[in-house]
Length: 308
Image (cartoon, helix red, strand yellow):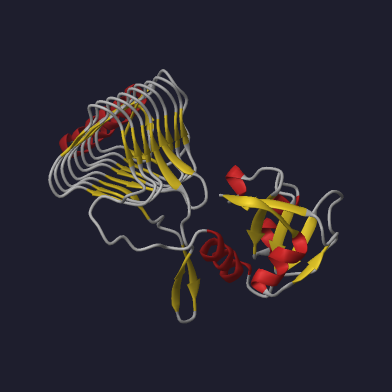
């Protein structure tokens, strides 16, 4: 998430009431998670296992819970609870504004677009030309939708990321401030749920078609001209490259990549990244021919044991 202007390190430290290491005028442009950080961003880290990754990332400000050597060209914000203070920054720079009407006055709707009854459009939603939004669709704040997009009934775009930190008192949510971006010529079936990014975008690219009851987790990127069948669950931070086909009731782990042109057969558990232009099946996932040979071998083995 970008700030609406460049802040200084000192200004940011005052917002969350913490110490800093670095030039007080060091520029800060936004906050982001580790996988999408850029120069000028703040990233948070609260576990020694990930200190090096955060300190060596593209982020130039690290919100951290220990005083460490500051890398050259960077700055540190020292906090006793970086998770809490990252949320404070999210709330400060992107406060929730409750809607009082069904279609926000700040939403933009393109020419030829049809909005059916009981659709909700949040603040600063943008919808392109010649779209069809069917009844009872809910589109949360800051969602971007391209041209010639069809969204069927009861679909929800922009719900919070499923991202929690376990505490002794329960689970604390990492507050989402990202967006959902739907490009041109996308179709979304009925009762789909597309979660927004934590700080970046959940993106569905041009020409992709998604069936009913599909869930897409936060910060996932789905490429161009993909086909995704019903009851599929895609976790957060997944990359699905162009022209991938995913059949029904597939589930994925987070943080994986499915290569261009891959085919994932129904009820597969995608537990790891897989290369493109191949067909996969089963849990744990394997190339379908190999998996089917394994299953045939097991059947023959059991049959031989039974007859012996």
